[in-house]
Length: 271
Image 1 (cartoon, rainbow, N blue to C red):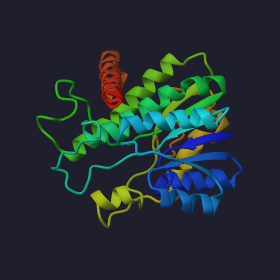
Image 2: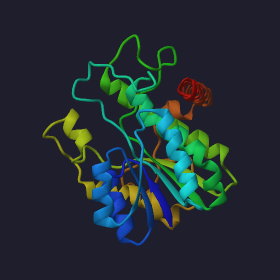
Image 3: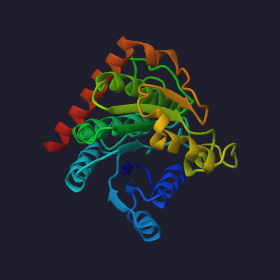
C-alpha cells in the first residue's frame, strides 16, 4: 500500500512510519525539518516530503507535490499537530493570522484531505485516518478562534473536536466512493515532544500503545467499510465523541468557517 503520514519525523508519526516501512509498505513521510527528514530517509529508506503546515500556502504546495509524485494513495494519515503549549495563556497565530492550534490541528489536515480526495477516490478502496484526541471541547462559533478569551487547552480541545466533526462530515460526503474516514484518540500522554512541552515529566501511555491503535485504523481489514466513526485507543468498537460532532448544523458552520479561512489565506498569499 501507498501511505502518506503527516508529522512523521517525531513521536507517534515516526513510530507509525517505522512500523509501516518495516512491513514493506510504500510510505511518503511528511515533516517540517530537513535534517529530521534526511535522518528518517537514511534510517528507513522512506520517501519524504517537506512543508510547514503552519502556512496554508505550504499545505497547498504539499498537496501539489503529492499529486505529482504519487499515482495512487491508499491511506492518508493526518497526524501532524501541536499541543496546548508550555504557556497556555499565550495566544499564537499561524503565518496566515489564524489561531495556531486550529490552523495546524484542523485546517492543515482539512485542506490537505480535500486536495487529495480525487487521488484517494481513484485509488479506492482507500482510507483517511485523523489522529485526534479524547480531549474535546465544543466550538463556540461566536468566537471560534478564541480572540476574546484564550486558553491553550481550550484551543487544543476545540481543534481536536473539529477534526472529529470533519471526519463525520467527510464520511457522509464520501459514502459509496470506497473511501472511509475515521478518527481516533491513539493513547493518553505518550512520551512525545508535544506532551513534554505541556506536561513535563508526565507519561501515561507508550508509543507502542498509540501506534497499535493508529496502525489498526490504517491496516485492519475488519474496518474496511467502517466510516465516520471515532475510536478510543485500542478499544475494539467505536465510541461516541463530544455531542457537537453529531450536530449537522455545527458541522455545517465548521465547514463554512474552514472553507472561508482557507480561501482567504490562499487568496492573500496569491496577491
